[in-house]
Image (cartoon, rainbow, N blue to C red):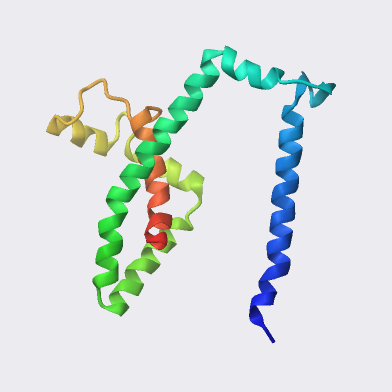
Length: 165
């Protein structure tokens, strides 16, 4: 029996569900939204025109692109040497450390976010230490800033990036 054929049904199901949901999403975007889940019957580029007309949409889009670039760059800078070191360690130690990295990825996102908020809150020990060393000034706000969001996303992506390398 060819074991590779066992992959075909889940692959077809995944492709069908993904393409179906994308089709519904894209076809809905070609109809003007009337609110409460109602759409106009005729096709229109109204939704796409709004993206170009309102600067807040474009600002949000470019902010997302910039944040994605920062997170990818920081994650690569952190995980490339880490993955290299893990590949050079003895197998037992390497498996233990990879297991610890994987275990940290299974912690739920709200718990990780809450931990980062507690760690880098306005009156936290970590922020007091950063202020005492002079790395940040008194008015620096970590939670809710672009830098804080980038650190949070980088923290979430490290485990997955190590596994990919």
